[in-house]
Length: 464
Image (cartoon, rainbow, N blue to C red; front, side, top):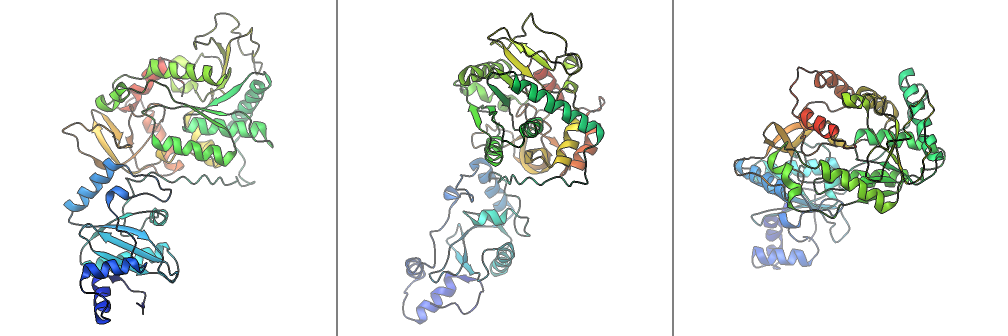
């Protein structure tokens, strides 16, 4: 069989050509013949869909997206790429009704080629289509194309590409002072001996703290590992983001997953913003420090997050049960920190104590620090439970009987309180837009569903 153009082909067109050659009796026989000739790959179904990294999809969101497409009377199309026998790149599509379509692309599987193929397919069918990609073609479809919606059932693909700050764009004096204080404190802690670790939650404060650690150790890569406390409630995006960050910067990542992962871990998903997790989180941190042998801990806590933190020391000594040591807590005069231990104590430091949330975002923007995409608004599948908008981030998310998944433009304000705190509705897709939202969110007159939960967590001593 020879293709005389680069147009869209389907089984009917191929069947007509094969029948003229006397090589096929029925359409099904023609399809088996085309498959044996290497022209058609195996048909796709929702159960076998994978992304470009061979990761499974969120089945709960996928089923919701399929049902929504059918309610809209859109033709569900599963798309993949498979070369022809002569090596020509080709896009293959099939629907749930058994229809097969393919589009040879001599110039490669590019965004323009996919867009052209989808337009041709839509014209051929005479109906709107909903596209669900599979395999390597998923990477190209992550770009905003005219015929595709955001791939909500697919895990995000992080590109930890850090650009250098232009030399002409110096840090403002206030941020430069905060940066110098943080680097000085980190070097003091590293010089005190012991086994240091950076407590990383995949949040924005942790990203800034890692950036300061890299500057403090420059030109050598940091020898201090990242400590992440895993949880059944943790965002799947957070684990993926941390792995990419650790690989990109050459830092060791130590993840501790508590042994107690029972059904009670899903209480916040059942009851929205109900209190849960505080004793378990502190105990998990204690077990992690004991398991890995860390006795010097860097965290990203800030004093402006809560009024009760205003008087907390920048450097403090804790027992192995994470309780303050009664003696040896001296005041930090200027930049003289007490790092002397009698033995057995845990040394904890918060280099970002004097930073504000505005400082954090300004510094991230100027220094080009990669942060979780969850901080930036985009359409996401959520469910409203009480006053919170909870993200549908896993297959086993327990939906209540009357709840319906909906799409809203939302973003996270903090990762430390998820999923209890939920997300907020926002249109802030960049750091300047987030900075414009900060005065509104910090206003006492604003009713923000996440704030009571975050305040409660901080009052009970959870480290971000």
